[in-house]
Image (cartoon, rainbow, N blue to C red; front, side, top):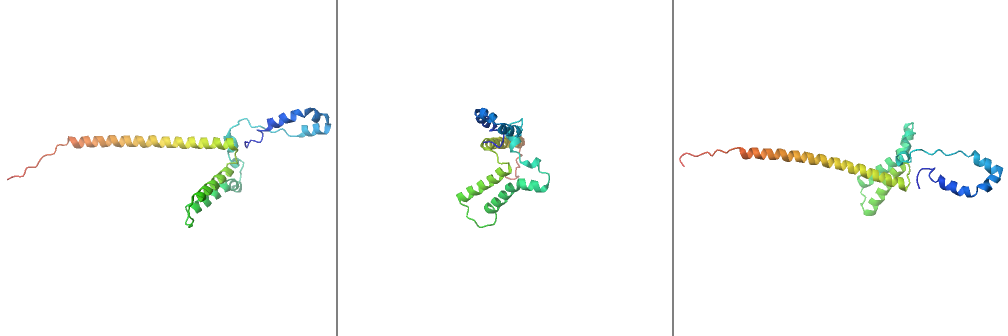
Length: 171
């Protein structure tokens, strides 16, 4: 099940094709079927085009608030319960329920994608997160290599310095 309203249209047309002779025999049904508007199917069948919130259609601040309200409200409530000053014992089921509530709020704000699109969104989010972690790891390794090189040079310089022994007179 996808959020694309035209995705299941092919199945409906297949079922209706079995009854085509009966439907075309009656002029009233044929005229009613002909008067139905044909759905516009979008050309790119990508989750990105369907899952994006209707923020592009939101022209006013009120519309934007309506679109993002479930995500913002669930985030605020979960943050208040889990992190806030409220003295609530943090049990496993409470944390799981809070995370589910948070996920539902963001899922609602994302336009309620179907299972396939949700999985695609999760995979893309994981790939983006992994890419960010990889970039950070490469940066940290580069900084550590530079630091080790500088430390090695400093230790070599320290070892090259000769220490003069001071002789005490009269000893």
